[in-house]
Amino acid sequence: MGIQLQGIAHHARQKLQRTLSARLASVVATCNNVPKGHVAVYVGEEGYRKRFIIPVTYLNHPLFQILLNRAEEEFGFDHPMGGLTIPCSEEYFISLTSALNC
Image (cartoon, rainbow, N blue to C red):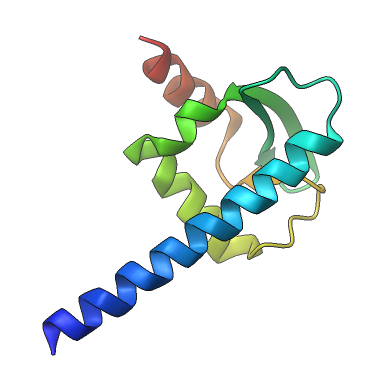
């Protein structure tokens, strides 16, 4: 039974990654001022969100994956800002991206 549940979880994760990849590709395509290999994300509290441009490679990092999972839980795939919205404080996001730069 555990093997079957792992298979279902693996299939769901693959589908989620394909959906996120397609969504991110459409966001990148609509943002003309985002350099190739980067993506725009919105970070901050409700009512005030700041736009950040980050390298696409960040999306594969385990700590960033946690934020993506939280974004999916909170917003699903319909982000109110029209782009990828990350539900965390601006300070946390800056410290995370600073750590990923090192």
